[in-house]
Image (tube, rainbow, N blue to C red; front, side, top):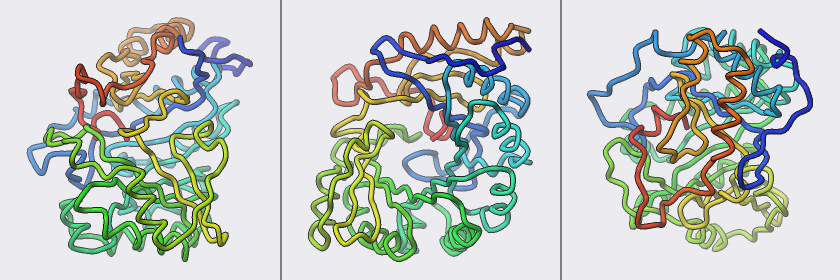
Length: 337
């Protein structure tokens, strides 16, 4: 290790002048669900375990990133809790000088068992993927019959007292319309922010079509049939969601219009796959191999330079709405949600 692992006040800025402060870290490409918008139903080829970054390697990259201005980390997958001893990694990451927040995205199936250990290790925020409350629709999209376990995991997590729990729902036409208000009422009664994410072309089956997307304005129209919404000022400068408070003060929603109105101008994140490939955009077709550098005995300075060089040419935006859009070879589970 060199001085770069000790936080110094630096900023990581791309060629468009965007300051990068968020690093999303996939810890595994494995998942116990088979969501239609993410993974094939069967015959999934997972990364060999020896190709995954170790906890020590992940922590080293996070330390280097912290020294360059990274302040917030999010653990993703696959399903992160498929990775054994995850609280150990969380404790390592929360101990890094300069890291202000460590969060996790999960399907909640394993939370009943692991929520307390995660919080004790320093995890403070959860984003939970839940696309439907109707058991049949839940089964249709996740290809698993386990909504009871998911809801129990959410309940236990809320009781333990995480700083923030948000529910993420992928919005698909002719599927989500009946679920939106169910999720809204759950969020209002239980204190969860509900976030609706436009269906994106990241599915293994490559069945995405624009006509299958339930767009943000359509979601807002459905909600406004019952509730008055008040826009939250400058929410896109903080994260990817346009946020709205309910006028009666009972809750908040977020709309991530990744297809119809991308937030690329405000993007402040990069991501790393479970096998150590740095991606500057969810839809990147190029990757920087940090694992090769680490296992090739590269210095911290060399790794930092590779990160800086990759960020410098970070894409101005994705090309979903352009004729030359190219869907990434990796599906969502292999990139990290």
